[in-house]
Length: 471
Image (cartoon, rainbow, N blue to C red; front, side, top):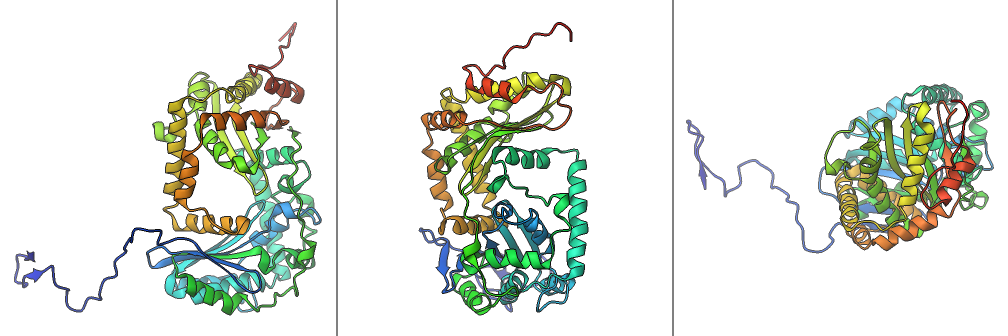
């Protein structure tokens, strides 16, 4: 085909390469899983996991099996401090500014996030800067200076964050913290994720080094990358992570806390339950089926308007501000909960509506609502995995927890296999455990924990009747 600009320029044949233009590189699919997750374990126990993805940018990071659940023998708040101290001065880099300037040369950004069981140091940058990125990550994780002034600045940042947490109009972060404290009282994932105010002054370099010595060892780490060749990543790992002595000295992994999450139930003055790890997929489907949101949420079926918490709760009880299902998943446990909010005068009625929804979960799910929930879950999974940072986190977390990665099509198959009897089975098992309750705000009308427990043990989910002479 010939193309003419209609001016004095000569006609150009689109079938022939343009002069002076580099030869194009095209993405191709060859029928089998070309971009499967590749995993290599180095001699020191560190795992290297990668997934190729076409493009000139990559996301690379180090995930450590370390978080607030491992702080039973330490003052709570160490993981919170380490998150704030990340990418500060190191053996090679004088300051955080120098790290950011180094990354800027490769169009890069860095971030550190801690959860209850994982700490994740990540960098997104151009592929050609991979060597610099892995060198920087190694230095940031294994050679931080932890200067007195940096620790003091972190204390200020932590205090500010704690103050902000209590002043936010959105109570969800605080409720999530409270419900974990109620569900796993004093152990593992029930330990505080945020540093308690009384511990801010207790955490210093000596304590941080003692903790890092136990938990930041190669056997508890994964170097994960998305958008790079596996062999190239392994080569960089060998160069910068194989024979490196951390600034805190030799590792002492024998001191690691290997406690398994112990569900206790209870109330911290919204209902949640434990679920076994094997039932992760059915619970994820149940969570989608319950759905919900705020009373002013906009959208159609794709936004959850046909979920149970919309149809049975928000559509019928106009005075409720919010009713949303949440699913928190961990290596050895998990929670399914419903967060709800309303005017303080209607708290008792709100609690009963939620307990009734929990009881109704034990009925047989309709074929259409179950298929809709499964389709929505698969759709959400696949859309999320379009994003490179999300793939990176998925690869890193799965390899850190299980040593391998289930690919999206395998997860979709597991979701498709969930039946109505699976939903009924996991719900019955869930309701046999004690509930965990967290409540925030004016609680004068909140039913007692015993009444909530009785409602969740009844056939219809109703609270015991109370009789008052005067209101």
